[in-house]
Image (cartoon, rainbow, N blue to C red; front, top):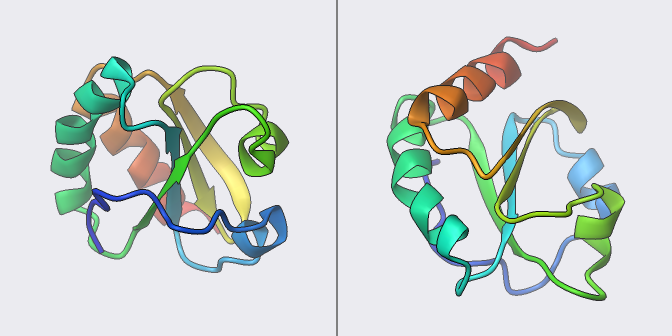
Length: 110
């Protein structure tokens, strides 16, 4: 499925995220955050080898319920889910290898 470069127009509910069956990376951040911008090429590179993983970009901030439900404190926060269950989490990753490892975990989760 690859990297989504745009944030979703309408924030999904936690129930909708929890109901997803496929492996998913939920990325919380903003378009103006320098850490969020820096992670984009790393995430894009890592996702190339995992075409079955869905990537959902969520714009986060005050009053955003989904980010609060995942207890997001810093951007970007990447939540790796399989069948709606959190398998891994990375906060401000700086290397593609960490992202690769988390992607491998959600593909192998049962």
